[in-house]
Length: 301
Image 1 (cartoon, rainbow, N blue to C red):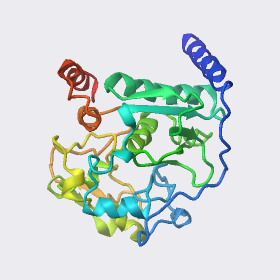
Image 2: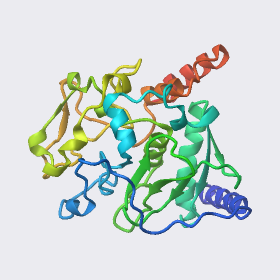
Image 3: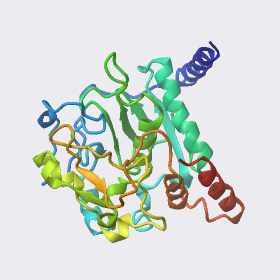
Image 4: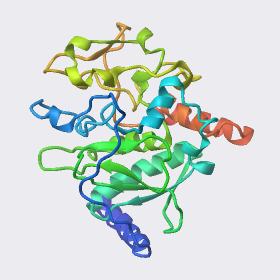
């Protein structure tokens, strides 16, 4: 009963805040960018069972909206110092949560936001109706599923989170999917696309749906090697059966016998937390460096 009242209170405050600003029109159907030469087709996934909601959008690597410009820079190593416009200035990220979500789903999204605000120096703040750039968290109908742009794009920037149905929790069973997609919007890539990934995982190309083999390509050394070790537990890591041709046929497995499970969608791992703080220079200030290192090591899974 207490949990229900908390949800009602959160929704009431949320509704009062957004009733003061005019929300932009968001169509049911969008056409997010896909790089030339990368085979992605949402309809091509029909007929495959038990699809993860990060796969169903049919975008680059499943859930990332990527322009040719960004894709080409990725291939040579996108450096945030060289392209600062892709980062959120001062680590401040205004957001809007669609009023189309049910109160419980809004509470799930707000929990993800609260976790990021607590574990990093990044600040996600309700949009004031004036900021030019902001996240627009919205239940897009096509392409459905969980998807996001990577880094700041400018203007109203979609983060699509498909709400639960009677048959599936989709993107909002827990806060994990929302965390994953917002981390894309903050500029974090998939863990298994790191340049050094072949030391840690094996890609089983024979088990991948043929047209989606490109989703398992590696990015460049400059872009995807961090000051942190490879993270099997990352919330940004593919699961074992992503884009599989059939049940029981893994597409990615660990090269380390002791590691049986890949990725999770529950919480930030220690390294997820460290990478975000490192990217947004939360460790540059000696007064906060120790604080966020301790938070990551204490609260990260």
